[in-house]
Length: 190
Figure 1: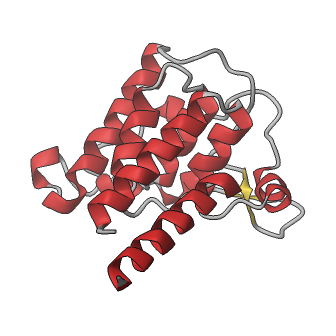
Figure 2 (figure 1 turned 135 degrees about the horizontal axis):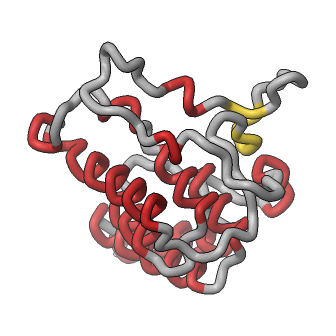
């Protein structure tokens, strides 16, 4: 199975799963997936009508907007990363415009419990600490992207561990991908 076929199968399986997934499951995908090579899924999630504020902000911060603050415009971003530039700006515009599903869960970019720190005083990772300071930045992360989404923040770390997720995928998706790879290897041996 070549990379394009694998990527297409991954995208189809994840879209099928997320179509009926809970907000906690959406947040689990956003905060535990491998972002390398997931551009099509990130684009789909960012435009989906079920996208809630917590997931939108998690998607934004997990794509490391601080990196993009070093570039004044999309054309200056290395070509391999331009899609990320467009995605984070589209997410910020969508959050600002309120064009999201109603919030049912919370998430705090300054205290992301899905990335535990082991520090009782500050148990979750502070993504906002990665924002580039004003004097060095070519643009500023919007203030509304720095704030928490009110509500209970699910314990994603425990959820994915309890459910047997790997790299942002529920077990049935991982299993289907593994089976497709094994089947392809058997076909290639013949």
